[in-house]
Length: 78
Picture (cartoon, rainbow, N blue to C red):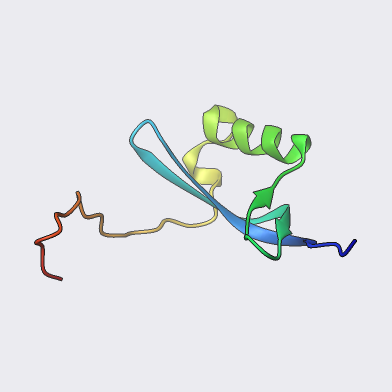
């Protein structure tokens, strides 16, 4: 059977408590066919520690500014 998973680094994003977190260079196994990402238990634990208070904001790499749109209807024009 052909292996469809590859070891690579991905960008992990999460919205939690009204804040968005973006973590780059996260090791993952990714399915070539679907793009689904799988993380080891250690990686998940490290992400949770980073986000839930293990690191303060001054330790993050860099700030990011972005625009967020609240939503749209099918009649909205872009």
